[in-house]
Length: 519
Image 1 (cartoon, one colour):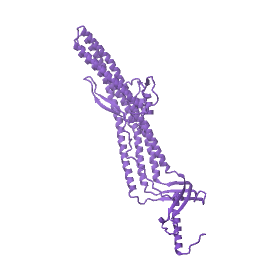
Image 2 (cartoon, rainbow, N blue to C red):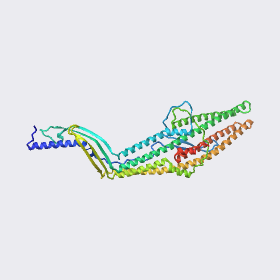
Image 3 (tube, rainbow, N blue to C red):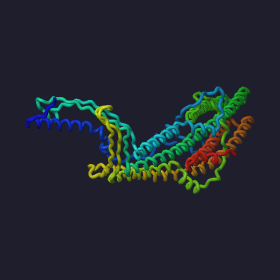
Image 4 (cartoon, rainbow, N blue to C red):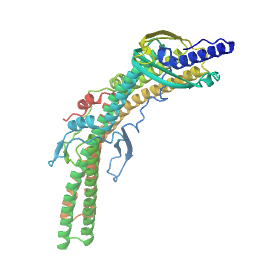
């Protein structure tokens, strides 16, 4: 039977023991019995990357250089090529290669490229990531509900709590059970979280518009590569015809030498030109195969699939689009410009979110459940409801530092937007310059080709009549070779300028068929 102590020492010891037991039990049970009273961390403004521009290697561009690879009859031309960096040079091949040769039109190539090009897939993944980040930000404004169940078995050393008496055990057990069936936390007002959600929404819009810009770049990559392959095919066909012509010239010179009407030098000279043209034909065929592989990679053809390109796109002047109209259209439809504007708005919201960190925030927490020694021993219903008002007083300069960071991002993105506006204007104006220049080159090159053929016929007649040697004949044929190459190049330059104009104005998928039409 337990008896109350009578001495003052025993009473003091009992008081100490009781206080220690209560303190220990209270400290151990506090986290489980009051989960809604956990300290509230202040919401931080989301920091954006300094630049809003894509981290990809670069954009698809048209590179130009002035060339004159021929003699005096050659036209000085602007030699253009399409530069296709990663990820636009890659794709995800789909399907199984067919044993038949696939007829590939520009329209079907564009459709494949827009579906399987790695640039489109990468930007689609970036858009999904931005949407996920927005969902995470929105979740901070919605109720957070969960269930917490805990059962604790502890053994404490009472001496660490200041209880050290011979009549009292050194250790004591503290067991408790706590089950919060529902625990709710809800932000009632937090302007930082609101601004973060708004900024995340702008980031989603920026990625959606960047995806449209990616499609424009894929159109430029596919159409430019396809037209370049068509031009190379035309050069192969022209070179094959020229090999036949040089072979006929050599045969004619060899026959005249056998008849004693020409020297060995004349025959050897024509043979050298024949072999030179044969070597050029081999190089052009290798270049055609290389360009075919490159196009297949861009549009994601099945591995090893053979294909043939469609009909050539002849020269047709552009008369439906005026430069001023194109500039206005580019200002309103260029997706990369729209994406840059969304990046600026996202940066502005980040600045507002950083400033909002100085404002109070209000939240509520509540829970309901049961607690006791064990689930079946002295268990009773418990609940907690608490409201929390957080007022920032001193953060050691953190908020000021975050404001400085967000303002730097805003300045950078505004500068990038203004720079891009200038680039859009330059793209449109440069496309019209290239169109006009290529149109003039087409006229000159086609005229030269006609004159070169007439000169060749006259030289062959003179050679047959014995009043000219193979020097004049070979020079005339070389002029035809160069004139044909200049004509093919000029038509390609003009068509490529149309593709560049479609990309410069924006919405290239719909614009290109209007510009690049067959006569």
